[in-house]
Image (cartoon, rainbow, N blue to C red):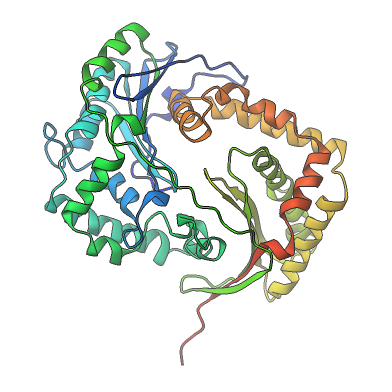
Length: 441
């Protein structure tokens, strides 16, 4: 996920104080297909306006990777009514902040304003959808911005190919476009013509491929009128055909080595292909991550870092996506520890999960962590806005914002053992040695 501007007013977004509260919302569709979700919370004079488009890196054509992320930048260039380079100035001058991010599956833009500027936020997002200026100077400018971002975040950043999956995904996917990185290749962007960028916008950025969410200090009736004013006349775009590519199961260990000019400490990684983020097993894998590496009392940290002092750092996390996910485990070597030794230790922890039920005490601690995470995820109107859009668009169930915790509560110790046995097997993974680039002679 690629971000541009950090929020400046986080303290104003707090709307909860340590307890879970149901998020109330209303949702409806405009005639042009735009899905609208409203959440009214008048406890602080702040409002977030967000638009999520159901287009990500997986929707790009072969030879034209990076378009979705490129548009994350390009659609801040300007519109017919917002001069080039003035978007951020308008937001800042009106006491707001804004951001955008792109994944394999969707692109999300949002502004957070004092609530008396709600109409401004709605107008700006309608401008982005209806009147963007896509021209050569904007494309050329953002091409250089994206190149610099790739250099700083991936090419010249320690472990960048792990963090952004560019050194992982090509091994895990053969047919599915998840094999490509979100940022794409600079060769593809350089080769693209202006008409191709315009065609990409026309195909994916219509109201019928978007979700508008407004959360915070609003009056629902007035907000609906403003939404009608600014969005109802935007023409519907073409119907978007979703990616529907199935991968054959991984049945044999994939062994690989990647080199990084920016590191001195080698790492051992195990990566497994996992089901869609909507699948219940994806939630179980999320819990398994917490068991293995969440905090200093976690299993891998306690064993490999504290006790055996063979790892400097450990990691285990699911990379959840709409069609398939990936589950990444790894460790950075301490001193001269061989990577094979790190692999053996990780396999020992996997084996325990596959053959033994976690203790009741560990299970209760796990449930407490996820209860706390659930409360925190709904602690700001900005976070609520993003969650509402995500649950509607990628999960097909907006009310998961309230009931997703029930999925976690329903996961048993037996489920954890079963899912570890189902997915975390040697013949179903990438075994990756991530090494410093050897000194050239």
